[in-house]
Image (cartoon, rainbow, N blue to C red; front, side):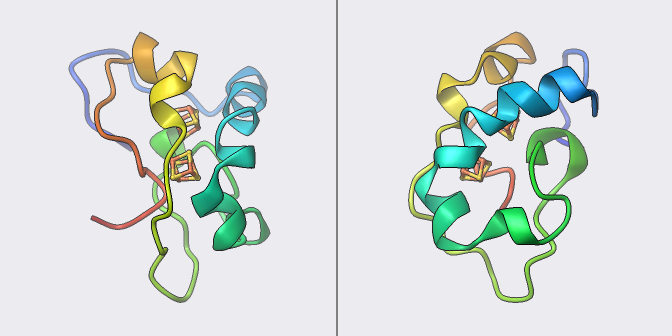
Length: 82
Ligand code: SF4
Ligand code: SF4
């Protein structure tokens, strides 16, 4: 879970749908096939990808996501270990 001073991002169907509009089409997600391994999406709420190899960062669409703004998140790349 990403720590913020605001309400955490809940793992809900509604939030999954919102996430898919951004994570689902981002170059990092596609390039690393992140949809094939847990937690599949909603990385800001569920945590980083469990992909075997380190996630290669190629761009992040999180800053455009309404949950990013609503929850006061910063930077993005929630799928990758930093
Ligand atoms: S902030 Fe990023 S990880 Fe979180 S729901 Fe939006 S697109 Fe997905
Ligand atoms: S967290 Fe950012 S970099 Fe990772 S899949 Fe979602 S939009 Fe792409």
